Length: 179
Image 1: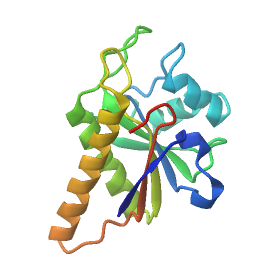
Image 2 (image 1 turned 135 degrees about the vertical axis):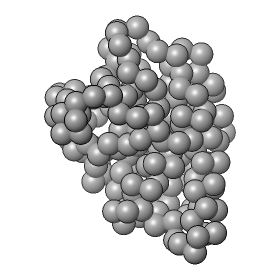
Image 3 (image 1 turned 180 degrees about the horizontal axis):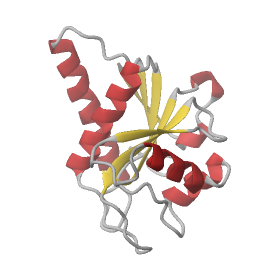
C-alpha cells in the first residue's frame, strides 16, 4: 500500500486519483455537529441533508450508538467517491457543544477498521483527512502521522499473515497544513 500526502481537501482530489471511499471521523451517534467545522463542510460537499442519510444508516444498524473505532458505510451523496465511511472516533455527542478531540488510539482503531472495510470490498484507493478535530486537538500533521502509522501497522499485520492489504493507495489529505 502506498501512502500519499495530498495538499488538498478530500473533496478536491483530482479526478485522475478518484477514490473508492472518503473517511470522515465522527461521533458514535452519527450526529453532525452544528457550527463551522469538518461536519458542516462534509454536509455541504455531500449536497445537504447528510443527517437524514446518517439517521437512515444508524436505524439500519440497530439505532444505538456505534462502537468506538468502528465504521459505517453511508451513501456518497455528491461526493466524488463510491461511498462515505463514517469512522467512529468519538463517543456520542450528546449535545450541541463541541466535544474534545478523540484520542490517538481511537483514531488508530478507526483507520484500521476503515482499511479492513475497504479491503473486504476491493477498494483500491481510500482518502483520509486529518481525523481528530475538536477542542484540544493535536496539530493536523500529528493526526496525519497517526493515520500513516496505523496504515503501516495494518500493512505489517496483513503481510505477516500472508495477505495483501487490499488497498493500493491511501491518500492523506490536508489543504491547510504543510507537513
